[in-house]
Image (cartoon, rainbow, N blue to C red; front, side, top):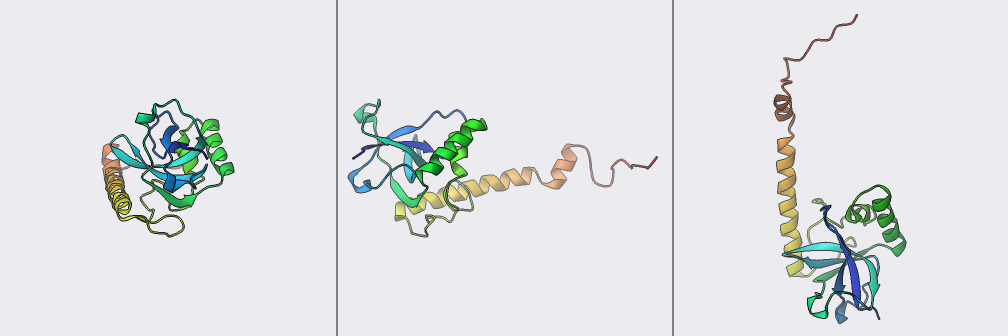
Length: 171
């Protein structure tokens, strides 16, 4: 049995150099390549995709942490390879390449149903609370970004106030 999962966090940070190793607990024995996990990452908890499993790691045993939960959603190993290839071929992050092969409703999208996996199964209450809070924060940030790009604001920022445009004539 493999006891180490190599997890690629689903985050858009370009400076991230993963995958990161996590100890697979006994109650998560079914975790394999393509499994989606909720993992502790710094002070946050993020979704991550298992890109490899093994028995050894270079990380000292006392520094290894366990995933918080395993979602029922997952992808076949061939699609994990495809997502990693896409990221490399198109000079993107592994997380963005892997997000393309995830089932709908999985990942960091604010449209994902809070607390639900791609199969519709409910998560544990503490995980559900985390997912709901993360979704709320993401939605607020998206709304602020959209508001800063609203048509009226963009027009004023570019000095192209509607009604004062340049008249084009035909020659």
